[in-house]
Amino acid sequence: MPRKAEGTSTASNPLSPARSQAALRSLRTQIDKLDSQILKLANERAHVAAEIGRLKNDHGEEIFSPAREEEVLQNVLQLNEKHKGPLDAGTIRALFRELMSGSRALQKVLKVAYLGPEYSYSHLAAIERFGQAVDFLGVNNIAAVYEEVDRGHVDFGVVPVENSTDGRIADTLEMFLRMPHIVVCAEVRLQIHHNLMAKCDPQEIRRVYSKPQALSQCRNWLAKNLPQALWKEVSSTATAAELAQHEPGAAAVASRQAAVKYGLRILFPDIEDSPYNETRFAIVGHQKCGKTGHDKTTIMFRIPHHPGSLAEALDVFKQAKINLTWIESFPGPRRVASNGGEDKAKASKPEYLFFVDFEGHVEDPKVKRTLQTLGEHCQEVTVLGSYPMALTSG
Image (cartoon, rainbow, N blue to C red):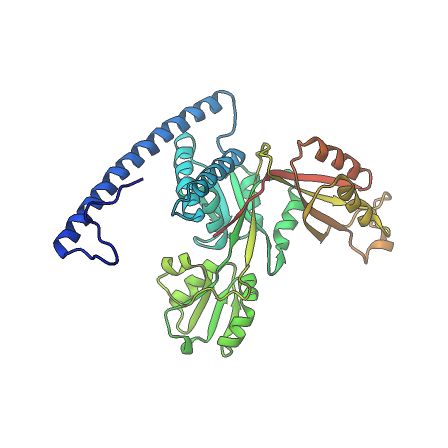
């Protein structure tokens, strides 16, 4: 721990200007020495990580290991708390996230698709998970994220799954149905802070652009504070900021980073109606994730269309004492009757599938037994991935 510079002032005994300057120079010298040590250790760490990468490559193992990276973050966060470090958890996470990102890039630069453009919340979630030493690709919709992963153009995709205010993201659930072979490798929980930004003053605003979900999450604030403004839905919050950059009388609801990117003033920060506004993102790809001991599994299942079938399916988890963390129903494609035509008696009632998250990894013996029992009550059960359970970031 840096020692106190000789002659440092106290509240009751302020230093003279000359002695204050001398103390400042001494403290800066300590900082320079510590920076040199930090740099030396960071490069030593990178050399060890590169050696690990070579060993992985020799044995055909994947470079990106969500389980191991989450373990590293948890270890350093616990050490920081144990030693009562002055840096908060977010700062520690950011430091080690970028260390791991740069070290990973020495082995392989990952390609990651997200719902763009830059500084959309999906982009921020991608940075939170992978760091900056990644080749990012912004695409126009969630389906395109999946297509890029499926075609092998990128290693991973980042897609929103649910928001604490607005619930499920239907486009993502639709892609789970269409491409169940693409699995969830990891998750990111990002605390969402919306900001009203523009180049004009508040009284001049006539239009507010943003993604439908963002406008919905700020609807009470907007109705109260900008009753004269029209709400205009666009494909992403970053697109909204870009429009506000050029149109007179236009404002955007977007991230702080988007305001910097497009040269806008943040007129009002944190305008979301709920202070606990959070979006959960899935990292999707072809890579399955190993156990960490603090995992979550996502499945989807289809049940017979008769009373009590859902209760029977959920009771399987109760009997196994497995905790469910999320359940969502979603209309699935209609089945084709055995005679080759659609069952007209059921044509007016679409079948529903259910998405469920629960604590545990698919390799856990208890989880294996539970999924086997669940299959006895369902027409179809698909495991969409097991991965480390994420803490809220942002």
